[in-house]
Length: 613
Image (cartoon, rainbow, N blue to C red; front, side, top):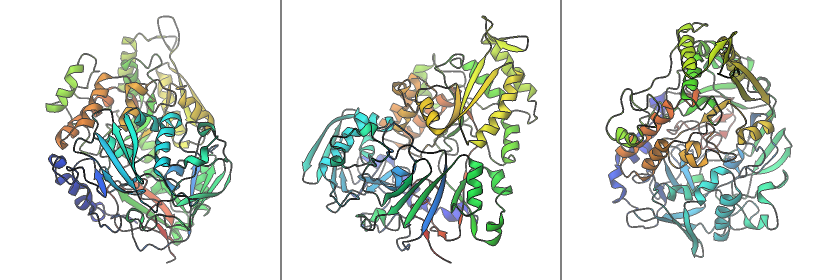
């Protein structure tokens, strides 16, 4: 079942473009200018949906409740607390069982609507934000959500939570209760996004953790949330079963109408992707996301599809490509030398590998915000982009100001031309050849340790092809395939030279960019800045995004950020995922209307439902 991009995106006129067309000059004259309570908040302009909206535009408010959906994950889990650094938890947990004060619409670049909070209030400069809780908001055990729970949640996550939550706490000057159901958060810096981020922190129950160690809780201590689903059963490392709470408090909240429709959602765990795929073909799983176009075209013809019991659905989207590939750890020599990283990019024969792995059907990622207006433009940096970067001209790498393009091979297996260029760069960086080995002045051979998860069959296959090219350059490579627990620990400790990498990026990048590549987090355990980049130019571009009051300046700042990241040669990019591919049991349905972000959290399984034909 193919879904036409233009038919599927009336949303672009209704949500995405509508919000932007109001103009970012309207920030100071819009509905929030008087610091009055509102049903929602947008990063720029006004929310696209009115105060009396019935449901999100991509949800079916009449969707039936019932049925079951079964997902598959590779690896395992040793924690059911998705809010701490310790252990590995199923990634789906924080989306299905927990909620925040506001919920995000995936049909607009960055807009939030009331969820646990019935209203939000902020002044024109967004120096503070105030929320008023819904009186009916409840935790899954039936107890009311209080202001005390909210404040405690912000504090514990800022002190002991995962790194992704800690950065926000540093930007808060004060947090105080202002009424029986209201609280105000005042910020200590100029950052227009903070008012929105404040509405997106998960809210947990304070009383559950009295006398307990939040950061080191055992597997059996599952945080109590307010979300529609609760864990009803699990087998450590093998299966998690979640059931819809029949007494879920928020079923009539507009943001929730038509969402979270399944009675049961299961997650089954498998040793690798091949075994998982066989389980899907056998009917053990009822849905599977596929990221490989060649496999989608050649291997999704099994009997269940031929009978019509399994449907193939393709959904186009309007989000940036983000970055998928292999990240290089610049904390370690010789990867701290951009010439070595450029040589590794040249040695990566993308055209041949892409043809081998996907049949050449998926275009390469050329920059972090590729496929969107936020992406860097070809050629020299001009205008506001150049103004942002020029103060750092002496520290920028070649290509940042002049323009940078990914290496292109001739498509043959040998890739001779690019390997010659790579060898010349390595020689320039002090790595010559001795008896077929690439060595430095001390005679030490260039060696890289590649860290991959067990079961990551696609990246393992790609690395097999890549290693041959590196060996032709005289470089020694060891690939470590480790289980989830070891992978998480080594990634947290930056114990790798090269590892797999994925960063989803939105149409409204903001504070999360500091987590991904900000200097302050580069060397912290558990950092998401896996490449270890510390760049004043990157920090300045992020700052410029966060204080932009016009759309034009915001786009320029994002393009400047994209230039510095791309020319930094930190990641060996793979291919774009410009189409979301979902194979699913015929009983699993979804609305005709798809959000601009496509298949992101908030779409599958959130707005799907179960129905017999």
